[in-house]
Image (tube, rainbow, N blue to C red; front, top):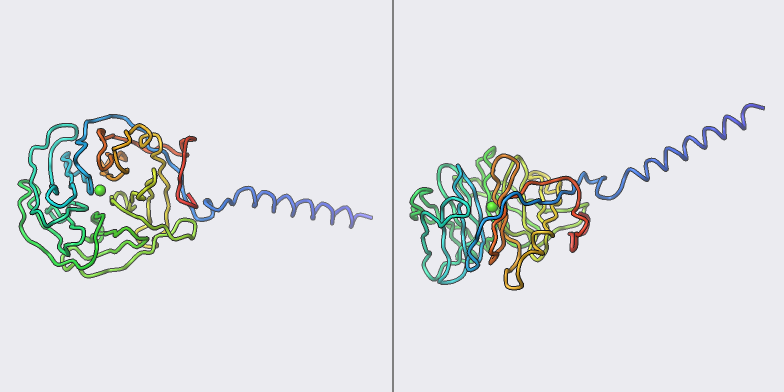
Length: 273
Ligand SMILES: [Ca+2]
């Protein structure tokens, strides 16, 4: 009687395959989300009065945008040194995200409805462009010659750089769930990185689908900051896989690289990371 034995072997094989499948497919794996930890390589001083809203590195120059009415500014210089150039904004403008694209420096305003175009050397204002609605983070997708903008929700808006026309709106999800509170942005290597306001995490988003593809644990660096330091907010890609990271009133600006896996001290991760 060989049939029962063969049937038993088949059942065992099928059960084994199902168990292997169940073990391999965790929710985050199913969505292709990778976990990383930001590890500091260098620690530079940073102004505790900056109220950082935008951070950008281009050709070795760090650009920073600070917010507030009457305190907003844009600065440029080498990381860790006094800015070589700093320009204040009119008191009625509240500065937000910043990026370099098309040879210019671009600075968002929060609720003023204008995008400021600046000379990237002198930081002088060259033009103001109408941009209705609230604006928080900004980065530049070189492949598309387009901006990506956040506004504190789960939506990222891609706009043509020359016309500012909306190309598409991404609804950002992590493992299928909407992810709101997206703040400062950074475009790097085909991924849009976003600070998640109020958390110690940065996510990497696919700029076409809106799906989160990376969750970056910054818990270790956030935990080093004082009670008055304010939230994590500021990502600038260095073009070599590294980033500069800071917070709104942090005394530190860190150069970091990403290593696979969460820190082990993680807390407050966006659900699905
Ligand atoms: Ca940035």
